[in-house]
Amino acid sequence: MPSFYIRTFGCRANQADSAGIRAALAPLPETGDWRRADLVVVNSCTVTHRSDREVRQVVRRLHGGNPEARIVVTGCYAQRDPEAVAALPGVRLVVGNAERARLPELLKETADSGPARVCWSPVDTAAECPLPPMGRTGGKTRPLVKIQDGCDSACAYCIVPKVRGPGRSARPEAVLAEIAALTAAGFREIVLTGVHLGAYGRKRGDHPDLAELLERIVRIPGLGRVRLSSIEPMDFDPGIIRLAAAGPVIAHHFHIPLQSGCDRILRLMHRPYRTARYRELVGEIVRLLPDAAIGTDVLVGFPGETEEDFAAGCALLEELPLAYLHVFPFSPREGTEAFALPGRVAPRALARRVERVLAIGRAKSAAFRRRFAGRTLPAITLASGPDGTRVLTSNYLSARIPDALPPNRLITIRLKTGDGPE
View 1 (cartoon, rainbow, N blue to C red):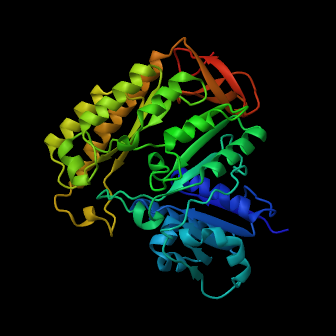
View 2: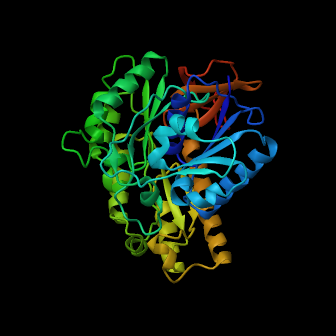
View 3: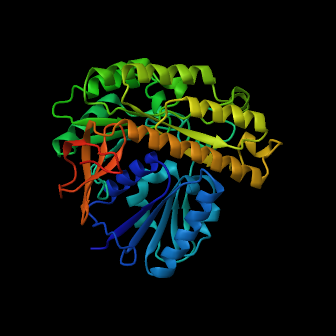
């Protein structure tokens, strides 16, 4: 029986899409060795020019090392520029995001030789977010359940709405059934994800919103823990904080993108909140969940960002009780408003600013970890090796225990003053 291999780029939504691809390709066996695979699926990202370049490099390497394999490219790069993807060596089939669910059918219809076939259409504005089975995780301990896709925002720097389409949500009964099935299959932690997760249910009168959906989820019998992926600050319902504080099911970990700590830059970005709102939200989380890990995204060097703007952003980051930062230099994407904006930051100044924010992030992460030295924390086991077992705490601290334990077990650890727990 022919085997397949999946190479996934980008965000958790893409990782969840890859789990759906695995389910669609069943019963074909999956292999972790791309050199032996008969079918290679590349699930691409296009959020930056670097993402595109990495996809192209990987496709060339895959073809060079396994020239007999059929290479399929899907995902956001395939949606944004299908012809460029089709021109890559070894590619037999290009499948846009709107056509991804038809992948098994398209594979049967695609010849083994000749020009690459392109299957592309606009993302259907009327479609709900499909929710295929998520149990085939590719060896990962924590399955991702993508309950939302697309985005209706218009951030000036972001290409995602053009390649993912408008916001849409999975049916609540489908979400509850899938989480119940994953729980029954023995998974102890489940991660809810989406392109714009906090907008879940917003456009459908018969859908609950995210906070209401979580109230139903935490009542699923046997459920261990639910972790939330990124939620935009303008969509963060305080009810989520109260629900997390009321019991142990929702992980005490929230990723809330800030992008800029300067109100003037937030306006230029078309981000619909200001720093006062962000500061208030973080303060409410810390008040009710003092042990919570709060992470954020920071976009450095947006066109027009002055030294004064940058300094204001750094001051806010240093003030906020954050656990970690994800830092990105501005990357112009053709098709976004920011692509044509004047005032791009010079490369040397951009690199300096990025390093400054990275340094803030390193200091924040170290300080957050020190707070929990000697503390007992709930965690999940991830993988074992010669030097013990990797674990992840509810509040997103990575650690290692000396005992060899199987993955997917909820345990309690005591964190040492060093890099790992006792």
